[in-house]
Image (tube, rainbow, N blue to C red; front, side, top):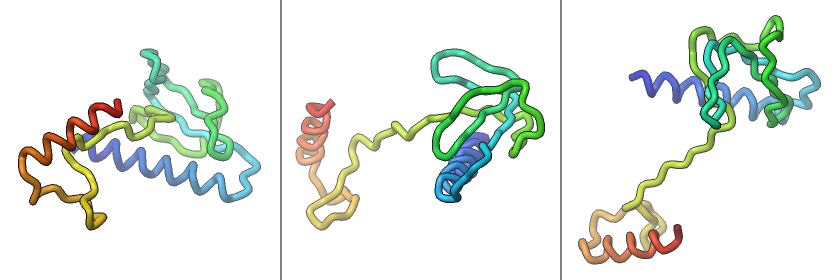
Length: 117
């Protein structure tokens, strides 16, 4: 349930940033969070993420009156979706479904996918 909450918040922040990039945004959006994981192993506390268009400009712990206050939530800015469904792929009909494949066909697909890594 907690992961759904984070996913929902991430989607909201993503939509806000995406929408702002088409808005002719003049003023940066500021998002205050209690905890920020920087993706490099660091943790920032009580900081504000400053976003201009679709780019994160900076972290500013002194920024006042944030556009969005996320309270006690944790933020991972700039994250992209890097997960994969290793046994899923598109079939000949263009649909994502491999239920009718034999184990040998699935193993062959897996071998081909692993050679791409």
